[in-house]
Image (cartoon, rainbow, N blue to C red):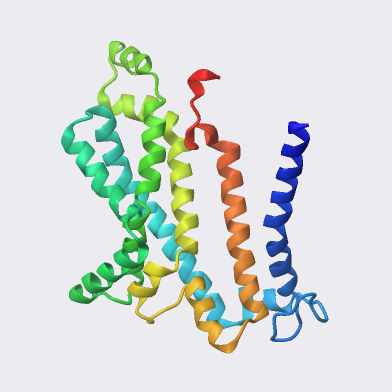
Length: 266
């Protein structure tokens, strides 16, 4: 009986989660400029506008991609030395640095965004793409820091000792033992940061200073003209990117360990 109730609850949860997505996806098919459900005269024109013909949306999408990829790369580059030092030494200094690296993600986004707005304005870089990349890279540094740390902790120290016994240098051990075993965790951290950067709005609102727009900002700007089907296309893009990325992490990454499962009991 409890199993049946559990299955019914999961099915109901799936329906509740899927219904808004279905409504948004169908609304993107409207031929007019009004978001209606069910759609009137279904067409794919709004998708063509979003990805090809409407400069406002194509530019916003390009900005989102540049910032998301750049921020994810920066977050991984910053996270690796922090995670490695924390794993190899475990000193108080390394723990402090790791805590400082994770702090921006723990702060309320509006607090971090306002602070960055003043910071970039002081440097004269407010409203630049570079400021957006660096801001998101620092904001989402905690994600690859956690995943890479989990990957490092999963390494069997006996493999490192065996490599050292056979005469391998620290650089060789890192290249042939540590890096290959942590690669899935590094990639997972990269994609986690990429997805959140692609969807982030509050911090980007402050650091862009209306000089450029990402897809999230453009959706907000378009609200002045009411809800349009093209906005729904943007929402579908977010959902699609998230599903593809998290599916890839689930397929090629160590998802149970990333989610905190204690694999020692399996």
